[in-house]
Image (cartoon, rainbow, N blue to C red; front, side, top):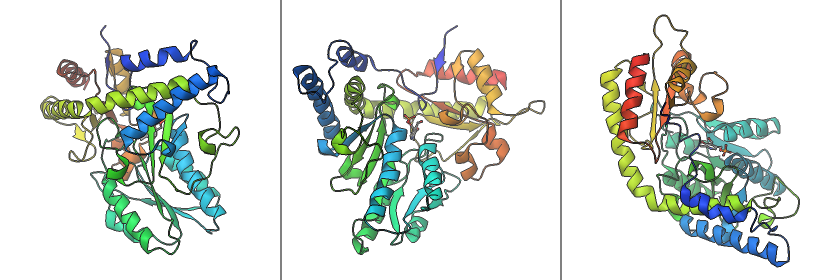
Amino acid sequence: MKRHYFDYAAATPLDVAVEKAMKPYGSKVFGNPGSLHSFGQEASAAVFEARDAIAKSLGCHYSEIIFTGSATEANNLALRGVVKAALKAGIKNPRIITSQIEHDSVLDTCRDLEKEGVEVIYLPVNADGMMDLEKMESELDERTVLVSVMYANNEIGVIQPIAEIAEIVRNFRSKNPKASYPLFHTDAVQGFNYLNCKADALGADLLTLSAQKIYGPKGAGLLYAKKNTSLAPIITGGGQERGFRSGTENVSGIIGFAKAVEVADRLREKENKRLAILQKYFLAKLKKVLPQAKLNGGEKNRLPNNINIYVPPKADEKGTAQDLVINLDLSGFAVSPGSACSARTCSPSHVLKALGHSDIRAISSIRITFGRQTDKQSADSLLKTISNLK
Ligand code: PLP
């Protein structure tokens, strides 16, 4: 049976060029980049080159890149690191503003920080998944140390106007007596393949990326932290990454990350156009073959690779998306019930709930995400199989 993958928001396959670039950094170049001898220096030079190449892609300085073990860790470093530094600087009762549709690595970190006395404002979104910028602006106050809003949502692909949000935060900051706050962080993990992530275009102080979502290896993430951003480490030890993230560098992962960034930069425009056409085609055909299905999140301001649909259960079905996901898998199609991180449980998606949808809708929706290997033929086969199962 031919298998078709439609879960690129959860994981992407390693690009062949990435795999090739990483190969020497296992048994051949294996030194610890912290070692003084030539084995170590060889590895250290390779990490530096990769850091510099990623910095060039983001339009920043290499010293503004902090490699981490995942995007989850980078988000933790952004949130916890800013709060820690603010507390150290004497800011009492720090406050964070975020949205209700963030990835769990942000939301759960916020919930944990609340237990430590940090106030967190979870801003709502409208039915299309867009944040109300006036509301966000009205929530900014002198205690706000961080605003964290994701670039593109991992479940519904909705894109927030990050440059505008950054500007609002910057304007407020310029009037704030504690002039270094609030800072602005964006989780750009799902955006990098398709959107402009240049530091100056976005204006974020902190930005998270993950290699595994851009056809790079798992276990490699990064936090861009603009020069002079007040950040404290959350992992201490050997002082790697300029003291912001101790732990021996994942050399092959970092090399693969840089190559993945290079390839993504090269393919971005072309893939954007190709997948936008495919997305439009898929949605139009879906209306015909499965008229009862409804798109979750607005059609505008959406990543070109994301389709998240409510497929109402039939009268004789219990109705969770898991049944459909399993039946599709048995037919050779990999899709996701909501976000990858909630695939193990079947509680209603917090993102779909934030859009104002019912528990039934939030539990009976599937996420279909396209990628470099998705073509019209495989999209047609998926549509045919869904309509046969429903
Ligand atoms: N942020 C977003 C938007 C994501 O989609 C994900 C993963 O799905 C993460 C963060 C966490 O990434 P990782 O599992 O690589 O830590």
